[in-house]
Length: 293
Image 1: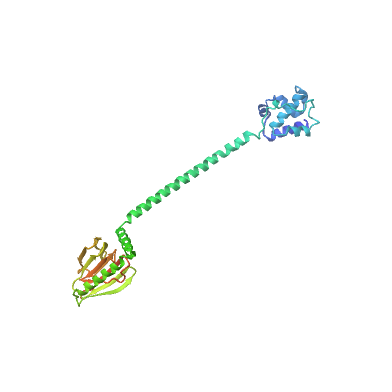
Image 2: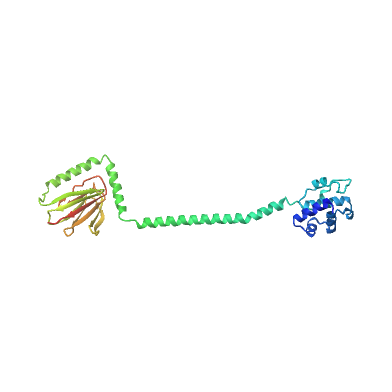
């Protein structure tokens, strides 16, 4: 076996190719392939074909024919025409499209998996967003109470207080109301005193009276809610301007009046006007503790 033939055979075996595989690729008869590996060129149709078959063999096992011819030029049959015609080379190199195509086919499943994961993540995110929005809407619906009415009255009262032109009229109205109350007969035995202020809640104590009658007078549109100390609701509604609401709480020991529009609401206990500690803060809770003699 020649050194060139041994080199060709070694390259074929490294690629795990049999002579039958090589024959299928190059379309060269197996006996000629064996002749190339053994260095038996006399069995070839001619020196020209020996060089052509040698080139096809080298390309099939990824060897450079030109470098091979140069390295083993003493063994390669010489011809008048050293260049082997391109049309005789039936072997396509393995570095062209088949390799790139096979690489793309290999990564295609991975790309598909990544795409599916991304789509699932997006759908999950959208579903969670919808669920969060639905929960928020339900919570807001469940928490809607009479405080909505308070907010309306608060905004209305705040806008009115900011109007400088109406401020003097409000002060005059309070002065007239105080003069009217001064002319009303007072009950010497009744005492209504402030016991404390905490935030928006002012606590009063009523003593020296055999009855406990509360009158709510709406000087302006207002919202009023009345509960006893145990949380029982006696009244909770909007009162139109100029209207009033009277309740007898003689049987109660404590009530709380929530006033939505303090400047536009007067409270009277047994005819005595309740003096707000803060006439501008609104809404306010007015708690009245009734101590019977």
